Image (cartoon, rainbow over all chains, first blue to last red; front, side, top):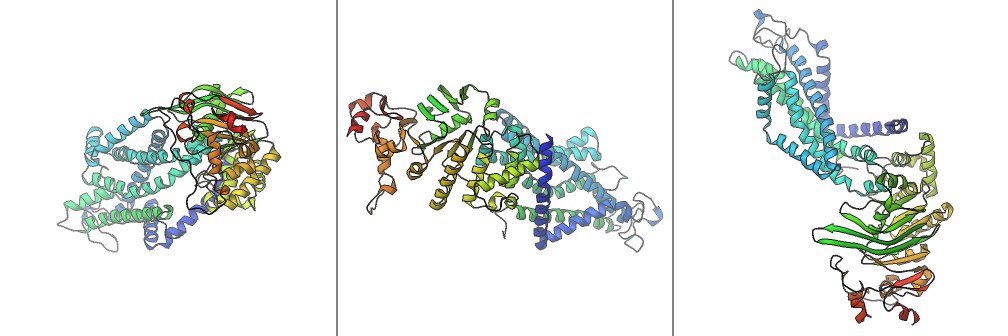
Length: 297
Length: 322
């Protein structure tokens, strides 16, 4: 990329930020959008500031205080080892967000690249990439996850690899179909008639058209990834103890459900809240950006 | 300056080989405006795409040459063609609603197409503003920030013209630039194009269905039918002394020429011949009411009547006299 192109993008920035701000205002005007945005901000802040907010060291064992109900000292009670569940939920949220944001981010970049190549490139490349995507998609996610875990052993990295591999085809397919619709559009032909080359058309003209819907799709995938992480951790196939994760909190609580219901409630509610938050936000973003669903101009 | 001679283009399809262009001859002298008329499917777009080297994958140029500024465009590599597109040859498209990228501001698009010029961002912006005011966009500085949907159709077409003329090309190809606009805007755009053409001294290859626009704007007219150029002449020749039966019919069908109230608009009966299985004789024979035996058997040769005026018809000579 030449210096002039970089400066070209720099001059576009103000307009772009203005648009982001305008879109955000429209999201906040809808009750569900505002709720989703609030929940997401809440989860983000509590995950980022987990160490600051957590009153206890999340892995500190205090066996005398095990399985306590919520109290002024332990806001969400304690688990079977006497660990403070409130602190564990906060730190576990950071892991959930780390897994979802990092793996979705990686899947997004790879899916976008492959999708652009498949959509704009020659047909044989398109066909082989589609074959690859369809093969990956045809595995049930959980079966695939269990197979990968069996091969590589349970860890956070394994969970992330599973998420990346299963999400790439979703993004790739979407980008491909959008690119194919765009590549015969008249403005692309106009650009080609103006002498624009392959990379210029992809970067300047197709990418900005594709990236909006893709980001919305990704934001709606975050809860799905969080549930995969929680699910695998619940099955003992994800995060290894003693690392706190919403899934392991649920799993531990499940074993002692006859003694106390609090660990299950404390582990389940953040999963529900985060899922709802990202889903609401994603849906209202889609409404804002999809002109067909837009209620007002 | 642009000279197409004996150009043959074929499309390979499942149905067979479509002979989309056959022995097309066309000449655009420097500084002139050449209009191309013909009904849909007569090969106008194929001809344009051959000039700019953006033919579909299943198309092939069988023979002929396209000479532009002294060199044959058909012999050039895609790289060399890309250097010509947008600098020496530019294009304006039919539908201004779809010819601009909907997600980029006008300013971003206009500065982007100047990527070849080694000048700074501010200068590119200045040039865009100058160009926009030349095509008659009021308040161009602030309008640069706007997106295509914030402009009306006529404004968008002016922006497209501004973008095409920004690099001061030698040849502007205008593919039905006013078809999607209403009549008032059409006149405005036509006058603007003519003004710009005269001040820049470029040539224009102007494609249109609208005979009135052609008469108003062009110096020469090329009439195409079924993948062939059937007649060529100055505007005066074509409109006052048409020689080919198709041109005569086309002029009769122009609604502007109808003098009396009528229930049915005049049409040319029949359909365009199948370009896969061509008739052995004249391409227009099936729809021509003056068709004689020789028309069905032999492909007519070019008959020249005057300088710059010729037609491909067996009867052309006799008709021009009457």
